Length: 243
Image 1 (tube, helix red, strand yellow):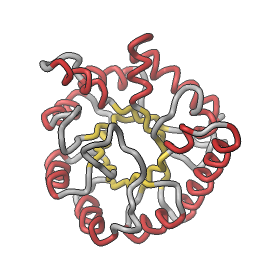
Image 2 (cartoon, helix red, strand yellow; image 1 turned 90 degrees about the vertical axis):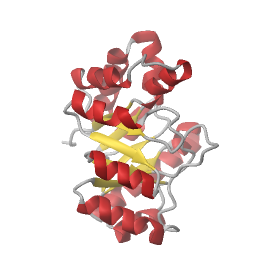
Image 3 (cartoon, one colour; image 1 turned 90 degrees about the horizontal axis):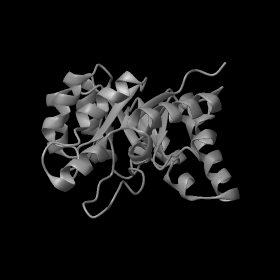
Image 4 (tube, helix red, strand yellow; image 1 turned 30 degrees about the horizontal axis):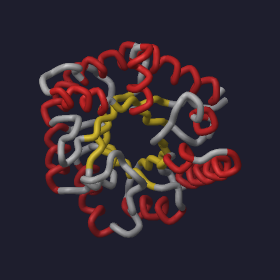
């Protein structure tokens, strides 16, 4: 029997809507509370360098409002390292970040940035923060994560999400192979980016994956059906696929 698949809900875009108008509404902390109440397994929040959605003060408020583990997505900078060490989230997922991008456009080049990433990974790990690297599903990136000592990788599913037909199946197979490789190497594989009700099933069925992180789609669906209903529907589809 396959192990349960965790669902981490990214609440960034609740904050995006708040920031578009200014003020305090809608509050991402309320979103975190709803996710906790309806069975979500974790909260993901990306504190970008330009603070376009989640703000610094949101982090402590989220941690105070719910006992769910907080997964802090962060760029590989000294500023973000200091913030992570101050707030002590359960996990820190190091992601690539470009100011001009609308959303994270690909995986972190862990293989090409070893010297830059190694001290961050070590300092986060020494503080008891579980480090994850958001990477493309490529063997060289898995090997780099192993050399860096990262206990978790999150495989970027954007290429899969934007593909169709045979191309989507080929990308799913690549994700499955890299999840299996990571697991064999003692690294816990997660996945996320661009997952929807329509495409989550084949990814959720990959037995080695321990967690999916999904945000934009769930917040978008919540406009029409409410956040609790959107999370519960995603949870149902993931469970059905894993079963």
